[in-house]
Length: 292
Image 1: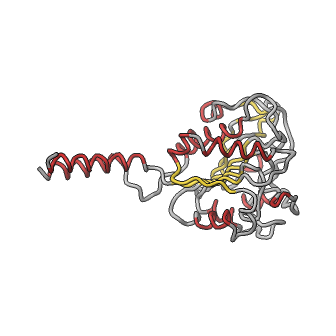
Image 2: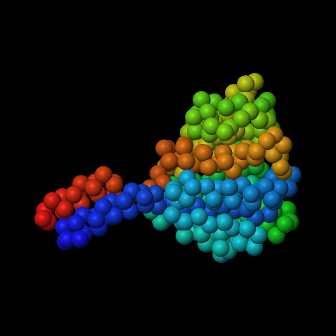
Image 3: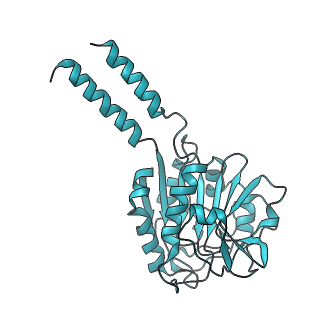
């Protein structure tokens, strides 16, 4: 191989590398102790593995970490440290509560830090929080023991919306056009803790509903809220279903579809300093042409 051919080969490999590493986000999943009436421990771990083993997720995230029992106690725990390390790091990262619970690594109970918790700082930095199963930030079961509840104040504090609730209301959730587009596996189901969409009117959050109730269109589940400053919170399948009764558990594959379809389109998973691969091609080709 002559010098010019070698240079072209190296340059093309650089282009391929730029394309395949366009996403530099990291992912953390918490699959530690659950509120067993809402999602079983086995189901939470199985959903976490479904996400971690998916080729789409492996292509989007630079690193994916799973945290379980013992990793979640306090801000200095492995999960707490992950959250702090991924706040202010210049990229949009994703935290998934596959257990539906709120360990003290992310939000110390009962409402110890109504402002400035790890999870609130993480979201205010423009990152993404996805909650599955139980009422978002309601309680911790770390160590297998039910904590003193944050109750509704957990979510209300992080959203900065006093009185925010996910109380039971409305009939079955039916996929919207956005639900059919972004979460194609989504099927009708009865949510136990749907979003109350009117509570977001006049706030700094814009909500996209993926399924709503035909008899109460102001209820939604799954749904996602985007803050005016870029932070994202999704709450999905907030239903008391230790094991999903109707076919395959939608909670793992549904989160995958949400991330791969909606979040890659509407989020900012690539770091702001990333070079556009097309620009990389132009720069590299210029160098090739100038070095005969």
